[in-house]
Amino acid sequence: MGRLPGAAFHQPVMVEEVVRALQVHDGGRYVDATVGTGGHAQAILEAAPRVRLLGLDVDPDALALARERLAPYGDRVVLRRASYTRLPTELARLGWEEVDGIVADLGVSSLQLDRPDRGFSFREAGPLDMRFDPEAPVTAAQLVNTLTEEALAEIFWKYGEERYARRIARAIVRARPLHTTRELADLVARVVPFQRPGFHPATRVFQALRIAVNRELENLERFLPLAIEALKPGGRLAVIAFHSLEDRIVKHVFKEEARGCVCPPSVPVCQCGRTPRVRIVKPFPMRPSEEEVRRNPRARSARLRVVERL
Ligand SMILES: C[S@@+](CC[C@H](N)C(=O)[O-])C[C@H]1O[C@@H](n2cnc3c(N)ncnc32)[C@H](O)[C@@H]1O
Image 1 (cartoon, rainbow, N blue to C red):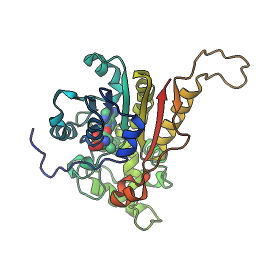
Image 2 (tube, rainbow, N blue to C red):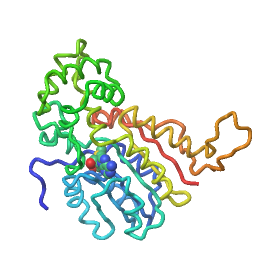
Image 3 (tube, protein in one colour):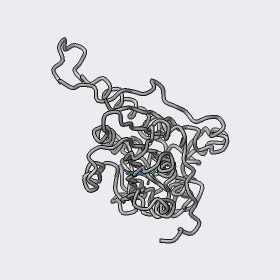
């Protein structure tokens, strides 16, 4: 498939930090669980000779670009249209029992944001879609036009930490059906009383709907233990989160996996029998350099956490 009209490669975030964190080495097997347009994947393939890489994504447009970018690496790369929650199945298909490293770069890519027809952006007019996987069953329009006021408010509050969740949900229910990103963005702008300069008032509502449409937090919770399971001893998992909800999940799962035992403190002798599966490589998340944020403002909110399989 040729280059999509108007499509540009997404600028990958914290690439050097990811390659260093994964300790990419000669002949190693790696997974890019969110391959997107292939930026991190390419850096991993370039970092050492004979590296092999499995790249997953649910977005066929992103995969088409990744395929183009990674073509020079021939059969060292396998790209599959699959959710990262299917990691064990995809590894089994390849006959890879264990891997040396896995990266997941969460969230939306600029390829997706910049395509108005995908419906991710409040800055462009497009259908209220927001699906990473264009064949997934639920669109943002379906949520906005069918959920109760209470359910919408909960989404905006839980996934967007939106102060005016209730007020926005009420206005949506009164105004629906809503069909376009512009209609929704304008409605939110009319309803939100206080607007921070330089911050579009619909930012949080769009983030919340995107998370709900793609079940992002549930998927992340399922994925992290599967990824840890797939690592060989000494293998590493690097995850880049872009907002506090994601980062909280990554931090929590990593902590639990590093602690092992999940018995409540009141139980004097461990009953669960779980032992630590990972070591946390650094106690705090790594942040992009100021230079990177200047070059790529999207990197601003990135937080990279890394664990090593014991
Ligand atoms: C921030 S982008 C990754 C960009 C990539 N690192 C690059 O260098 O181009 C996140 C990607 O994750 C994909 N994605 C979202 N949910 C996914 C899932 N459950 N499984 C696999 N990929 C997913 C999105 O379609 C998107 O392409």
